[in-house]
Length: 133
Image 1 (cartoon, rainbow, N blue to C red):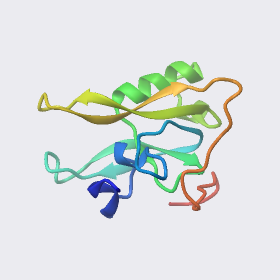
Image 2: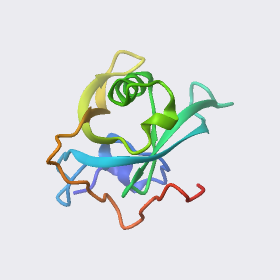
Image 3: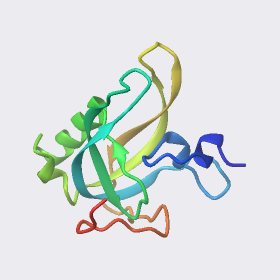
Image 4: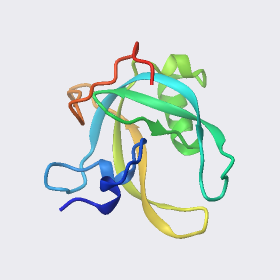
């Protein structure tokens, strides 16, 4: 059974997207195609704020990059320059995280892949580095 959030029109990755065909949590191994500065609106910030969006080959949606994941990407790439993140192969996974309100919720975190791990495709929509979204 699908998570109810997967049935909404969200344009960015959520933890509910990191599942297998049966709806069970699954780690996804992907390659960063590009990083763009995009605006995100929320209940807390209805006027919006700019955040890094990380686009992956083989994923139909980008990841809105939070500080924790940005620091992980920077560490793996050896640079805080987002241009150096392109081509980085990582694994996205679900894990419990503490929200700003202190509530524990499912979140997305990132770790380096093992050298023998193959890249995956989350959807039929492959986001290539030259695509403008």
